[in-house]
Length: 179
Image (cartoon, rainbow, N blue to C red):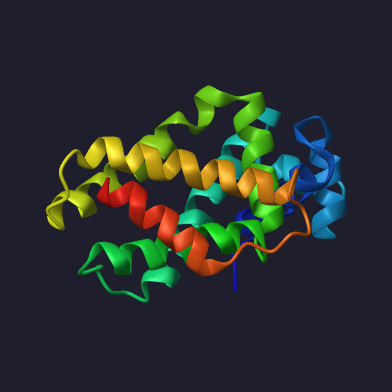
């Protein structure tokens, strides 16, 4: 069971997903969490601390999702990695759509605040690609990240309600990874 800080961070993400960053207040988080008025401000003294907690939670949940897709196994091929990444991006656009909406809202309002987490993700992906012997690992990692973010955004907006075949996404990711 998550601790109170984690519950409040999750509630903050739910508020941002539903109302945008402008809707993120201590009172809104209290209400979302079903907590007494003032609870959130006891844990996160100001709005900046609350936003930081939400950003940290997004990164933690993203990392957990990628680990779930990998099933605890390091990919041994580009095809396997493409499958893992495809599973993650489609999950972010489907069952974790609220998390993705919150991430985009936070990123659009405070791009500098997501830079460090994005860099950690790119570095990790580039390291995996290097271990698989992929040339230009960093460039390919950036291309996959750009495609994945764009696809998630489109599936939540312009292509909302449309299904995207797992095989199509996996083929696109493989092509970006292989060059």
